[in-house]
Length: 345
Image 1 (cartoon, rainbow, N blue to C red):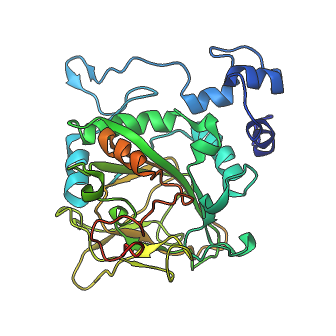
Image 2 (image 1 turned 180 degrees about the vertical axis):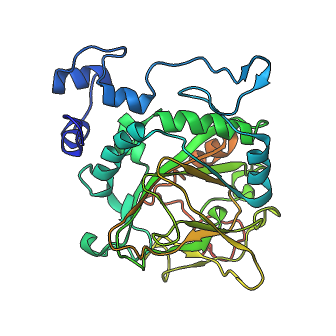
């Protein structure tokens, strides 16, 4: 990592009780020179630098792609593909310089240098309690909660603008974030087939008659079939119905993952590879997962941010559900009639 902006320094800075504002914290710890916000260039890259006015038209013609540091305009075809197939890939969202700054933080979180408590730091493909040295699919939940410098970063700003375009009739807000890493040569780093709604409380429990969701996955490494890129069942979420899921382990006290059966002879399965700096976007009902990492010299790190309609997020929080694996309210407790809700029956 270039200069002084390293995971080790980030650990010492951000894993202490804070603070009197980020600017004071950086100046106190690093003696950083003044800038447009009083923060070093590396942090400004995470923030996207100075705001640029969103302008999606030029000479009367619509402009698509990245318009500014906080606005990315999707094409009508990209929006239609998301709603029809349940997944769409957007290439080259972030520059290599921007990705490098996220990489430093991601490495600190995914290796435990920045502390994440309890079950929020685990191998999501295995039972809880497996020693870290035996992990294959590292899962770091809610990274911006445990490393606040990530809040309102450039990736979040850009994806927030896209979420609103995908659901223009909803007030889309960030629900949770997540970091994942498939370690090299771990062919068991499999993310089991599932629908995201299987992990979340349904409308019956929330009292909200909508499920509007879009989940963005930023590739911090080139992802392809060999290192376990996203795969999905094309159009499987259009009906917005939840298939019957079951716990991957004995129950959620033993492991967090659930799974669902997929029938390759009857359903179209498509890979969604993504180059470093690119993203995929999927909805809440599409059946998806990913295979293991068969590459001995390549990892697959992914930075996930999910957005849902504001009233859904508010209802989740009233229920005590924050997407933390440490929550008491979780997929095995929601009494909405689904078969894999095993507690309280």
